[in-house]
Image (cartoon, rainbow, N blue to C red):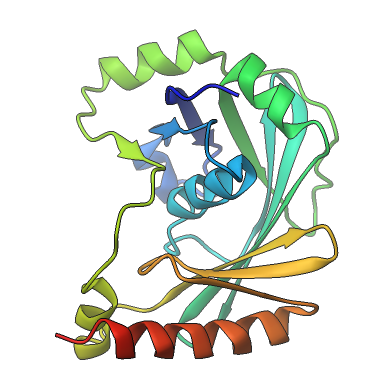
Length: 206
């Protein structure tokens, strides 16, 4: 594994004409391959890309035209739940291509396993630079001390909960504080996360 961050690009298709305004939806991230759990690093990146402002679609990500990840987004109350499932060879696909293109699922369309590659890393980088994007989002999770307290005082911002399936466990992560917990079911993972967040609040009170 590489200790130096790797630049990757995420992009997706538009789901309606109004969504075309911001096409091609390219964002740049720094993937820290040297982390202890690089798959969780990618979970955080994908969670930030699908920031909760999209419809409750299922998305399939491709790297070099090969399926690399499936993402299911569901809203429950104020929280957006994301179930993220990586293919077994995701790491190889990501390092070889460094660009993930997402298609969304619908009742009328069956998402294929393989597609013709839409973007290479070089094409995505050129489009990104041509559009003069200036913000680089890093996947490195920094200390969130005080962040969740601010959310607790200002509940106008909905919580963002990511659900990832790792081996036989579900991992629930609060993307504001980066507190995570796991369980044998989605429900138990969320319940455990609630307790972990409450403990985090108690330990980080102003």
